[in-house]
Length: 167
Image 1: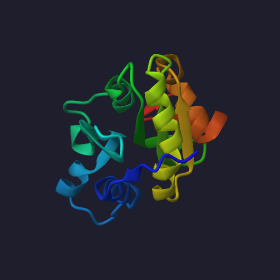
Image 2 (image 1 turned 180 degrees about the horizontal axis):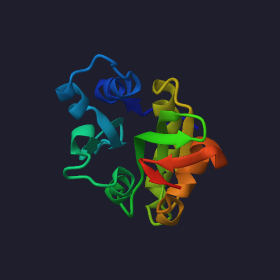
Image 3 (image 1 turned 135 degrees about the vertical axis):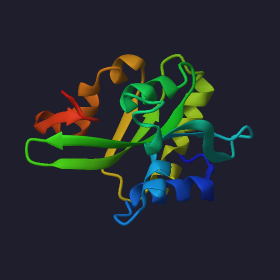
């Protein structure tokens, strides 16, 4: 069931920016790259928009953010739904990788109306996010708090570290 919700151009631009890694980016550009970002419904429930202030920049790592994964988990509202993009850096037994993960956060404690609107609008945002390899629906902090669960989504038992921390 589609909801008729629109994805704003700003959301699409942020996704495209996160998807395309510029090899020749200078340090300043790299520091402004988004590591993680949250999206929410607009107040009138007609658009998917940026959740203001809910982002982690690469420049924050090591300064205001020590563990990007734990910081990301803390950004999620405990009692409402969100969509998120998380740029996961991980290692398998063979190689280092970076992949964007699309996360649909729908905690048990969110209002039923919110869960229904976000669930019926998920396809609208997913259609705009072409090339996403990993999708994860999360229904509670217990699914998120352990980085093993994300490692499983990224590559199962072949993942040996996530965000520089061993699994």
